[in-house]
Length: 616
Image 1 (cartoon, rainbow, N blue to C red):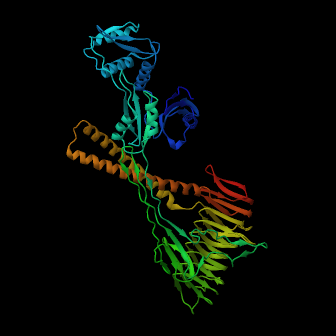
Image 2: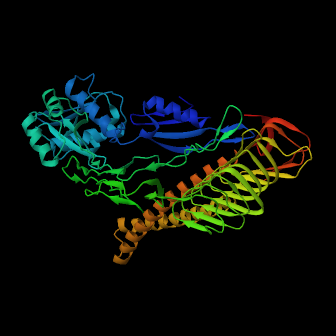
């Protein structure tokens, strides 16, 4: 153990320099896991320039056990048991009834005078000794010379039968029995003990343990004789989807010759009319529990999941299945299972078609001419070339050739954007962007930008991604101005600061409520609380519980944002071949200008600085 450690039956106090080492040592000594103990920091170690000046001190207590610390009552029970089973060498005192009075003999035994006095007075009370002399008792305790000292006038000895003491702990979930020895009387029988126990306890009695204590006359020892049953809460209902609801493998496939396969992108999940899209399992009710006193502990019923569905999907007659009403693409939109049909343009999007606005998937077999718009809630696929047009998709945009936007074309997608080439174009994607070449364009991605294939060229313009930018070649030998940025999400910092302020305000309000509750409880304890203040106490407790739940939710939100911020700090720029001078790189708040060629490199942020490593 650490310096000055104290160990008891159900807790341990440790002191040392390293907090983690103290915790591990305590868990090892108590033979418990971390979730089975409560840890209280008594003193937190302090250090100056890495040198410890003061040790840490903790108290580690086992959860959910009845108090079993060795106290004066237990010492008294042990010594009393010795009195009943041994001679003078083991007794601490003896009371004798003689013709001329009642006499007390005190023997030399390791025990404090206070404990000994309490034990003697307890025995006098149990034996109902009348008219005893307190001063004579004190004299006998002080002398401890085994001489008998008269403490009361002559009287008949009152014989006491053995008794059982029942104690209930941990919210009435555990009951312990202690058998007290007889004082000249009879031993309690098993049937008599059970009758007493069953008057107090109504569930989980261990009859065999009671029998063992009574039959074997195990005195002055707490024995567990009943245990309650925790309720088993019902399981929530579940929904099983018969399609991939988190399809993320939308990366293009690079062929052996360096070309990219844009034909088999596997972005659409097709279903047929009558297909079962999702199935629901009903929740269970659970099993009620009981305390040792027989009180029923209600079980929470599992929560029912809701089968939410949108267009072209129906609910089965038993209301447990979702079924497709037509052929098409199955998706989850706004939490609803939906089947989208496909709109096909056989030639070009031009004057013959006009602009397209469709709530499903749009497939164009020809080109999209300058000035025309396509809006679709599903994917947009174009086999030909997109000119200075506007394409907006609630899912993915796939251009099997590419786009020459003439500085006027735009692609906006909630999902990924995939194209062979992109030139003089504006792109914004909530997902990833993939192409063989990107030139002189304004590119924004909340995921990763990857320029692969034979060229793998990224040159000119601005290219920003939340996670990574990957390419073969970045910039040009002509030092073309090219701006790259990773770790871009300006809303996160503001959201983090707002939630932090809200947490501080909530914690302050909780502290104020706790102080009010403490004061009102003190008035209640002293019977000084009025009816109005009692109502105020109830409201304070309710408000504190509500704010505590709110605080926990805010802390979970803050943790999610911290994880997002950590992800942003891991943004990287990777060049398989070369980065030319003229490229500006920004990661977070850090900026680097490339002044000479960098080959086969990975550029990332570490310890607040932009660093260059080998290509990954």
